[in-house]
Length: 345
Image 1 (cartoon, helix red, strand yellow):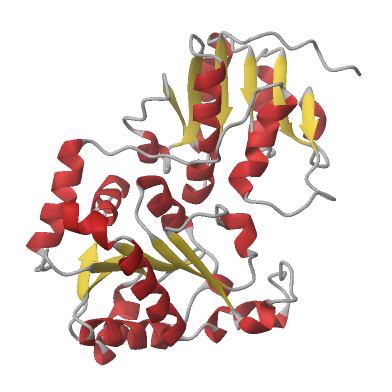
Image 2 (cartoon, rainbow, N blue to C red; image 1 turned 180 degrees about the vertical axis):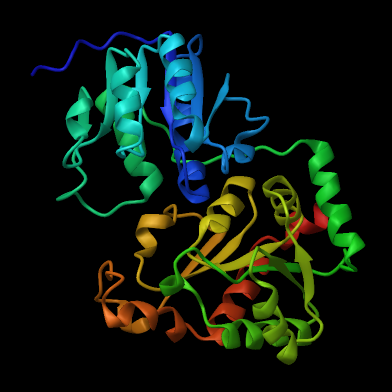
């Protein structure tokens, strides 16, 4: 069937329900839509867990929140707003029916097997060159004739929240004049995690060099952090009960070190430099190109490898091949690049 003719929209809905990193990456579409259609209303449908990420975002008119046990309510809310365009980077069995029932004349998504047919404009996922995921999502807009600008994700903190983040570090004894290196030690996928003994060795080295090492404690991290503290007793452990609290503390840090996980994308969207350690994932997919505030590290043995499936025995060992010494050197490099910014703050 021939896609419907595309008219400039009055109302647009961007859909990304879950995974913190995916929600952050999808914010790259907002600036393009605002620039192309300055008078259009752009809303964002997001899952309840990730919804705090998008608070105060000036490019979002309305944040619609999707709760799994209230799916019908979300469908009705979408239908009632009579969107002209639905842009659905998630393109999942949960979001495709919603796009279809929205009544939108233009529905952009990925050409996935089984439910991709519901989209009037479909972008192939397989057989395409590897590129930064946020840039790939911008191609959904390109299909609709939208001119694409620089690929840039964005999150927003108020001045009050940024001040609260600095106070949170102060309350835990962080010395403000020292460079602050934040660590996130866990991921949702254990094959991506960097070993705890590597984090411990890095933390000890950072302390020896006079850096403040802040470990952001996510749910379930208590025992892991206790193991790190055996080697690096001077680390500062900060429980992070809420996403906005974490964002504020992260914005007050000078560098984030983590594996390939959502907080790394949050850091970039807030302007915090990061060192990201990759295992089975391709850095090119999850790192914006030519960004001097990011250093992506992967095992030397992976130079000739592409994306490694989870079931591949190498998947769980690749991240471990990145040594603490390489990460420490990357942290030094980022701190040197951004020292003038810290001195002016």
